[in-house]
Image (cartoon, rainbow, N blue to C red; front, side, top):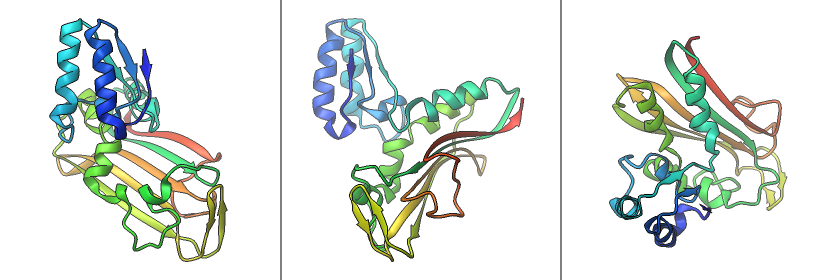
Length: 224
């Protein structure tokens, strides 16, 4: 069974998923991205305990993988890490052109808004809660316990007008954002998730980019 709504519908997700689990039906889901690593410190207990109890009662399992961007920032980097004899640092990057995207990036990321606007995801706890569960999961796979998880957030203001599927971004407004979620170990960032979202591939030219509009990339510093 697969169930797909986001964690914004947590109560409804939990109610439905636990019904399947109690009935002994295994669930594979992208609904609740924080469930990728249930022991993440920001996970509310009332999101974890009902699922645990339902799995025990039904002798079932609940597997969660993400949609932001799923395997590209968890299973893929861990698979590549397994090909190395030593891993010192790992970074998983998502580099996207949002020109034709119609999602809620203005409210969530501030794209199209004035630079002084503080979008929802600029809040460190919300950002880590939304995307950061893979950082402690990768740390666990590497056999380390992180000291802390930090974030960064940068904005790029467009000097010219930019047309998007949602309308027009006027000069002086944000047309690209770059943010990171960082796993710090012994005072150094060892694990990093990086997102660069821009309107047009020429936006924020000094930031990482790829040869295509949508790029997922893993960089590992280590020994093969």
